[in-house]
Amino acid sequence: MAKKYGMIHDNNLCIGCQACSVACRSENKIPESVYRLQVWVNGPTEYPNGTLGYEYHRQSCVQCENTPCVSVCPTKASHVNEEGIVLVDVDLCVGCLYCIAACPYQARYVHPVTKAPDKCTFCHESRLSRGEEPACVTVCPTDALVFGDLNDPKSKINQVRSERVTYRQKEKLGTSPKMFIVPNHKGGINS
Amino acid sequence: MNQIWGSMEQYNTVVWHWPIAVYLFLAGLSAGAIISAIVIKWMKGNDVSPWDGIIKAGAILAPVTIGVGLLLLITDLTRPLMFWKLLIHYNFGSVMTLGVLALFVYFPVVLLFLLGVFKKELVENGPFKFLAPIADLALSQAKLIESVTLVLAVGVGAYTGFLLSAMNSFPLLNTPILPALFLASGVSAGISANLVVGLLFFNSSTNEGNVSYLHGLDVKVIFAELFFLFILFVGMMYQGGATAHVAKAALSTGGLSTLLWFGVIGLGLILPIGLNFALPHGVKHSQGFVIFNALIVLVGVMALRYYILYAGQTFVG
Ligand code: SF4
Ligand code: SF4
Figure 1 (cartoon, each protein chain N blue to C red):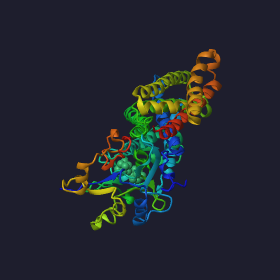
Figure 2: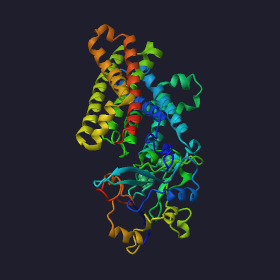
Figure 3: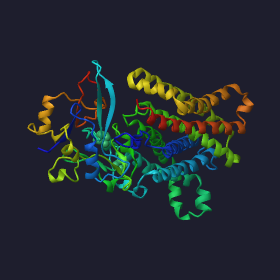
Figure 4: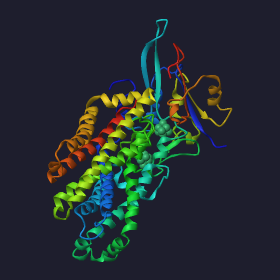
């Protein structure tokens, strides 16, 4: 069966250290001032007992299954590969930016050199093709990121999904992201 | 910005800028100009040469405005030299592809219309003698070609709305009324542009009856536009939640809402309607007034495109 890659970001394990973001930048040679991945640190917010804590948000492509970016692209430059990863074929891209506008997650930016949209690819072009996990996942010091094949019941991601509560961002838009968030459950869940 | 996670500049939700608004305006105007020219041409007595000034105006405006609009659109691409890939790679699920395909046919048929109407100037006495057979075809098959053109023009006028409404992350854009609003305002812009060009450049051949007919039609279309705008915002309010918030913000925040109330609604819609009712018959039908009225309508339609594009991308809930 074809693979279908997905990821989990666990808000309880994340400490906002930015290791993933830095690893992404060096692995994918991201030019200055643009980002495939950021981790936003919101807070601190106060819990009912008076202690403080942070909320973390992984800002990157969530690898939608129903992809707004792909359906609007007039040339099929934006496409989904056999492994469920949403990619941009720079050769076909005219730079209309329809995909950037249509992405509800602000996951895309114009690459300063190619002038075509670029985004997180789960390290498809580098580590993944060598059978390794995405750079962000391997460097995470707290294992807040879990990567794997959603079609394989035995994969680590499916084990974790069976044990922890997860949700997906802006699900009501029908995009069906393959990025699962374990919400911070301290002080109640804000989705 | 000095958050530890870096600059957030790339997360600005305004992706499409003013050249797109101008393109949307010009495409709508082009469709409206050819639609109103054909409507006039199909009226009794107008279907023979010498053509009415309105028909001549539409014949010139339709190809010129869509041509300029497309040039603007292409230069606005981040990879403009790659634009030809749009012409050979299709995604039938994308409104942009459907627009490209519609324009593929629309552009030639409006050029055919131009060639037929200006046969004497362009073909008989002009540089395009070799196009004589095509000009003859344009005239002998006029009805058929014009019918096809009408359908395509409606398609072009509406597609500019679908282009924006297809994006469900923008509540102000993602509404079914947008294509209708854009089509109506495009028709209004086309009528107005035809009146201005017809009266200024083809004054001697422009029939007064046709001018008042179009002018009267414009007022009706403007009523429809007002109603569509009303439906747009009321519909968003009734949806509640984030969508209602977006509607409130878009109606009341910053320079964009000022543009909506004063530019789009005040200047572009209410003023023409008000003047039309308030002024005595003689003034209303004077050329000077018709031209003035048409100019404020055009400004209003441009303001509408600008407002919808920017407010749609700015207020995202
Ligand atoms: S998050 Fe945006 S870029 Fe990524 S697949 Fe979804 S729509 Fe496309
Ligand atoms: S910018 Fe490129 S990838 Fe994005 S929709 Fe346009 S052609 Fe497709």
